[in-house]
Image 1 (cartoon, chains in turn red, green):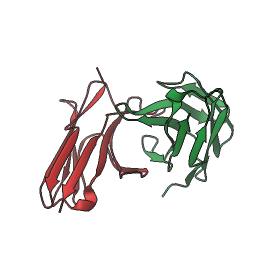
Image 2 (cartoon, chains in turn orange, red; image 1 turned 90 degrees about the vertical axis):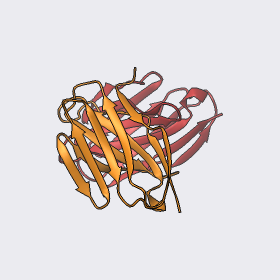
Image 3 (cartoon, helix red, strand yellow; image 1 turned 60 degrees about the horizontal axis):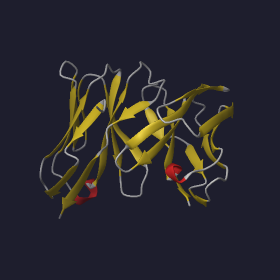
Length: 111
Length: 112
């Protein structure tokens, strides 16, 4: 069983819709990361969080440590939000041994 | 943006040939990582380094070796490339907050 599970694997929505991507993990973590990857592109860090909630523009990330669950929300979605969103965790404090990743959620926002 | 470059960006090589990928950083960060990304598997850690000459294995290290002789450079070597090593390879470094990671642009390697 993967230590980091994401759902859904694929998501197609209309422009303007509220989007939720979920991430569950089964290991102890020091931090959880949300990453974005556009087609053929590099990987960009959106959020790193160890508790509570963070907001950046139209993106919101939440984490529930007790339930080992995190969500990434996109409000007023736009076609430029189309990308793969990846959840990852740092299992050791300081992330010294690298990140463990989910398999990603492929999001398509149609105009 | 963190100053991370990878070279080459694209490479096609034949089975059995040695290949070296280079990751270069200008941030003077201690921790560097090599990941591979494959459809159906996502990103997986190959090797990482926690200082000059200090390296350790990750989840998928078989067939790969690494070296770090300078803080700014982390090399990934495929001693004898195989078709199963066709992948996109990403280098990453840790930021001032060691939990944070910044990724390089990636190297697409095809082994024929």
